[in-house]
Image (cartoon, rainbow, N blue to C red):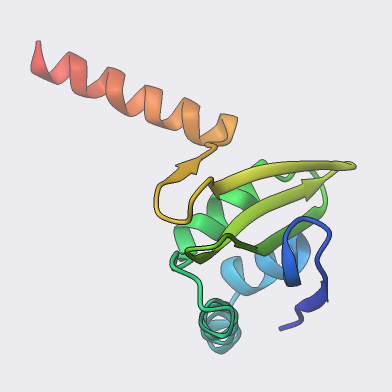
Length: 132
């Protein structure tokens, strides 16, 4: 498993980057230990930066769903006077897409990918048909 730490251009301190190819390799192929190592590295980044938001595998998956052919999942630390928190971005085709963000470190917004939105709409429609 390979990740990169780079000086942040989106937040404070250091960003944590996972290439989409590495994320796919770790999560969709027989790499059980690498997947655990990735989750451990994410947790360590969050703790080291004393972030109020814990990044879940679901947050990483949502960022991965935003990436077209190739790209990067970036964990970024944001800081204000009261808190520090981690946000998740997808970087793909020269575009930086905010995925999990906050203005204050306590209330978080999720920018669902079109894939996730279609899936949620389909589920809601199926539920509506069952309730009728």
